[in-house]
Image: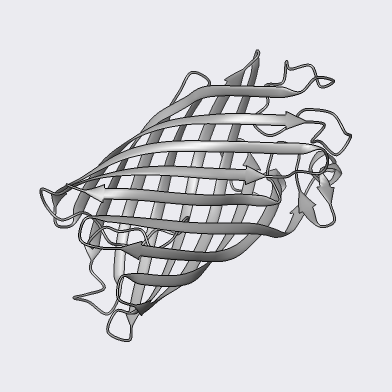
Length: 274
């Protein structure tokens, strides 16, 4: 099925054919921090449409539900997606609207017609407390009559967040890669890897880097002519902090605080083509 996501996190150069529309629902669970309990459920509802056979536009609605108690390194309730003004001695439970976003993917080379595939991606995002823009390069190479798909992404995202009177400007730089093999009709199994890097302000200089973190995990995918699902799970395997604040949030080689979780995360995508 054209446009189907083989991976949970890694993008391929596949886009929706001209005139076709797809509705996707994402559910992402970011689970476990240094102590206590932490559950961050991200919900993303997407509508994709093929403008041409090589250009796709999408719209997203992003919401989340967070439940946390004594999750931090210090045993208090604070950190990832928890407002700075929250009382750290109390549990935190809240469903909230996050952002809306738009996505455009332009495929300049198809892996089914050329030696490899290449596409460019842009996603502006806006919400009550956040504005961001993400720029991505997507590469894909197919083998074994397209049964084996290798994909790699590099992206940079510029963020501006305002919450409880605090303003934060940050840049994210990430490198993702994955391999997926179709082991029987309609079914594929694969592995994904993410390397996430965060910087203070809108610069990628080494002096402004806060941390780097690495994640790896499996995925499984099913698709027929009308619908699909993809399930993936990424586990944090190693992280490094570049300042005292970031290093203080590293436990057993993994970074927590307001950055990441142990399972970061477990993602289900379900979609239908119209």
